[in-house]
Length: 279
Ligand SMILES: [Zn+2]
Image (cartoon, rainbow, N blue to C red; front, side, top):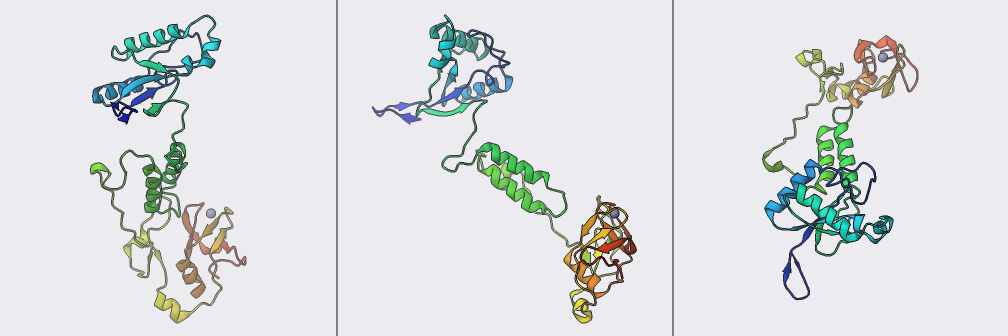
């Protein structure tokens, strides 16, 4: 609701662009040609009419002075009448006001050429969706923490969500899954023999902190190796690097990220110094 200069409450309005928004648009044909209605938009018009909190206007450049200049012989009145006839036929018998100008009472507009910007921040909806989609697409890839990706995506979408997406998401709940470190110091841990979808072990056997402290390092700490068979470089977790440095022959097999399985350590060389892994 807006207020005019006389203090009388005036209803706000919602603008609907015509070509490409309310009506299918596939290239300019004639000033008095309007495409078929777009079903999804007609539903929104229906909802706004039912809620009856705002007026609806057809917000179109067809009645702007620039467009009228091109309309050889067709008057503004004829164009307005054509649009209103179209509305009457397709939009529940209504003849809406037609304008090309927004004013202070315009609450929002539906337009296929608009970029929605969040008030006073410069954030665009387009960017929020792209950022969120990018974060969600990274879920499941190595090194991306699911919770962090979801949190980041939610942060972007919340900038524009009419109701905040923070839990409980209007009834839905999402709980952070427990994160289990993929390492064990127990040689009898049954999960040492389980494999994830990417071929990595669910659990890797490592030396305990106490054991590492007791033994010390007999080799330099190296963080990646090359599989000489396929040429791929695999980065390893710090605790595995420490285990190798403390006991070079601790592992008989080691994982290649490209081959997707554990292979004999003799097939790998350390990136840092070229020495054969396991020696
Ligand atoms: Zn390989």
